Amino acid sequence: MAKNPPSNPLPPDTIARHNQDHQHVLDEDYQALSRALMRRGVDLAAVEKKLAAFSLALPSWGLGTGGTRFGRFPVAGTPTTVHEKLADAAVVQQLGRLTPRVSLHFPWDRVEDPVALRQEVHDLGLGFDAVNSNTFQDQPGQAHSYRHGSLSAVSAEVRQQAVAHNIDCIRLGEKLGSKALTVWIGDGSNFPGQHSLGDALDRYLDSARKIYAALPDGWRMFIEHKFYEPAFYATVIGDWGTSYLAASSLGAKAQCLVDLGHHAQGTNIEQIVARLGRFGKLGGFHFNDSKYGDDDLDAGAINPHQLFLVFNELVECELAAPGSFDPAYMIDQSHNLTDPIESLLSSAETIAGAYARALIVDRAALAEFRAHDDVMGAFRVLRRAYETDVGPLLARLRVGAGGAADPIALYRQLGWRAAKAKERKPSGPGAGIV
Ligand code: PSV
Ligand code: MN
Image (cartoon, rainbow, N blue to C red):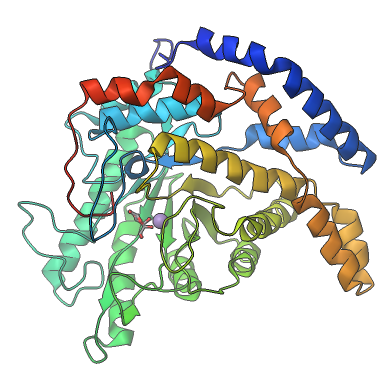
C-alpha cells in the first residue's frame, strides 16, 4: 500500500540527543545486568530476540481521558477525534517502541473513509489491530435499543441489529487491514428471574454463529468474558468456561480473550491462561490492573506479581506450541487521572518487563525442582526471576529500536500535551468509560 515514508510526530533528532546524554549510564547498567544473567546461564541473545519481537496494541479509547460513571476530568489537550488519537498513539510508539498497532472501537471511531485512515496510520508508522464492536450502548438513530441485551436479546430484531453491526465491523476491519474482531457484550440480567439463564446463552450462540460465518479467511474472532457490569446478577459470557464453550462450539477461528480486570477478586488468572493455552483457545489479552473490580487501572500498578505469573504461563504456552502460539496482546485501561500517553508508556514497559522476567526463569532448574517435589526450590526459581531488575535490558532494546532512554522524561520535556492543549478542542466533562 502506502509509498510515503512514515511521518513521526516528534522530531527524531531530539530523541537521538536525549539518548546520547543517557548512553553512558545505559551501557554501564546493561553490562552489569548481562554479566549477572550470563552467570546464571541465561541465553541473553535468545531473550533479546523474543523481546524485540514482542508488541502490544493500544486501545483507541485509552488515548483519551477516561472516567467513571460519576464523572470525567479531561486533561487539556487529550484527543477527541480518531485522528488525534492516532497522532498520540504514534508518540507512544516513537518513544516506547512497544506499541506499533491501534485497536479501533466502532462506532466510536467510525470514519467516512477507512482506506484513507489506513493510509494515515501507515504514514504514522503504525497499523491497526483487532476491531471492536459495541453493542453495549445505544447510538443516535439506531432502530432498536440494547437496553435488554444485544446478541442474546429476547427480541429477534435486536439480535439481528447486533449481528449486523458486528459484520459491519468486520467489513470495516478488512478495509483497515485488521485481522480480528473482538466481541464483548454487556448482556445479562440484573434480577433473578429476569432471564432464562439457559435460553440467553442459546440466543448468544445463535447470533455468534452468524458473525463467525462472516469472518474472512485468516481472521479470528475473540470472545471477551467479564463477570459483571453492566449486568449485576448474571452475565451471559461471564467467565472463561462459558467463553471457552462458545469459542469451541463456533470453530477454529474463535478464541477466548482474557481481560485481567474481568474476574472476581482472588481468581487465579494465571491458571486460566494455562488452561486456555493448553486447549489452544487463548486468542488475546487485555492488560490492565484492578484492586476491587473492573477498575481498568494501569497494568501492574496494583499486582505486578500476578502480571509476572501470567507471563510465566504465557512463556510456557509459547514453549509448548513453538511458532503457533500467537495471542493478540493489547492494553485496555482507563486513564482517569494521568496523561494517557504517560500511562501507556509506563504500562507498556511494565508489561514487557513482566515478559522479560518470565523469559529469564531458569526452566531447567524449575523442571528439576518440580520433578523432586522441591516446593521451596521451585518457588525460588520464580522469585529470583521476578526480583531481577530488567529495566536496563528493556532500555537497551528500546534505544536500539529508535525509542527514548527515558520516554516519560523526554515526553514531558518536549511539551507535547501543552502544545496540543492550544490546538485541540476541549472534551466535555460527561461521565463514561472513555
Ligand atoms: C469491557 O469492560 C471492556 O473491557 C471491553 O474490552 C470493551 O470493549 C472495553 O472495555 C471498552 O471500554
Ligand atoms: Mn477489555
